[in-house]
Image (tube, rainbow over all chains, first blue to last red; front, top):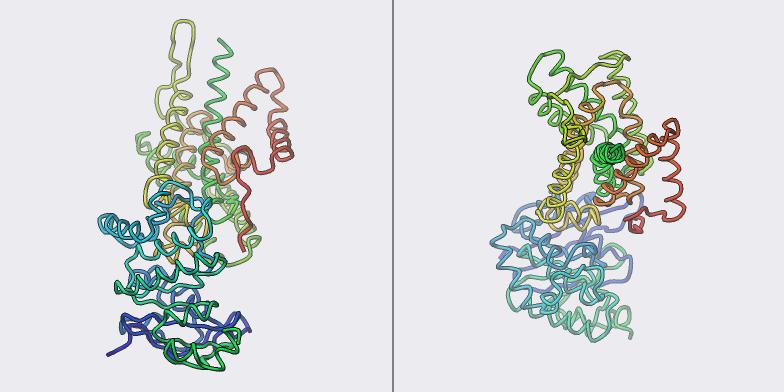
Length: 236
Length: 291
């Protein structure tokens, strides 16, 4: 079976700085795949490149069998790939409902009316705050809004960049439960996390990214028990 | 009665400033550019009216239509040709480009039309309306009405429509807007189109009131509208209207008490005071510098 997303020998640089140097990985339909690695390993750069925000120097990105290289970000969303970016980046001046509207920008009003009900079921707190401006919400609520917003485009592949960053432990658990539930309902997920133990425990497979290249790969469980990974990313 | 007349004059002039200030504030809101060529778009609009009516002898309705459409297209074209290639350049580069476009339009107009003023014929019979002893200028009333309607439509557009929400999203975070599937370039073009259409309406209303077109007429008009936008809080739509009316009233009342040579100075003094007391303008928010 061909992979849903297939990245091959990806190279990306910012000016003279090479951020990603030959990254390759696959995601199959229905999986949760995680990229773990230290700060600056190139995780976010990889996601931003897949989304079309950054142009790669070389390499290929194939989604549903078609190349995404050189396609504009808004066209990539239309093809069924959504990124929930690092730092959430909700539109703080817009209300919760308006943020969700923007998430469904590529969809019809009728489709959005349907999707928004699913999002409210998944994140009941968003329904309570429909008309509140997003900037006045807590970090955890903003993360839920950012995830709900990304789901509005009905993505075949949802990419989450550091969804647990800066959240209280109880909220981190909640976010990971939601990730698992979304996956159970059929959403394929690419998860980038610094919280490697949480990420590996929900993931089917993981890739370890080290200064711009993949140093290790395996199932979530294998990596969780791998000595090198434990030492480097799981605190012993 | 003269007081009422002065209030009407203030509203009329303020309305024109408000329409122009709206264009300034919208473009600034979305790409943080002070579009110094905005005032010159109005100049082009006034010349279009002059050509269509005085040169070609067409009906004023056609002149109004072509002025507004011409300004809209010009605004979008300026963005595409001069600003869009600099979208990722430092803000100073694009600001200097805006000043360059402004000079280009002013000198272009002087080359084509000459430096002397062209008389824009009246769009309609504008003899004063009498209500008992009170005489009101129909142009003033029309100007105020058109501004109220334009502002209402604009507010609806920005607050309630999909494209309007996209404009606000792009204005806050261009990268995140892209990730939503919003075509940022189209959204920016649309913003220029709306701002320039308002400038086109302003051009017609200005030409009705002052009946002439000169290559440099956009400079002071643009500067005053810029002051109005900053006074109200740049980036804010209601702020632009309030700022426009304030500047209009200030000018009219300073002239009314016999100090008309000081009217420009008073407007700029007003700006200085507001910037000292409330640097973000009347309705402005403190905006975080984008990284």
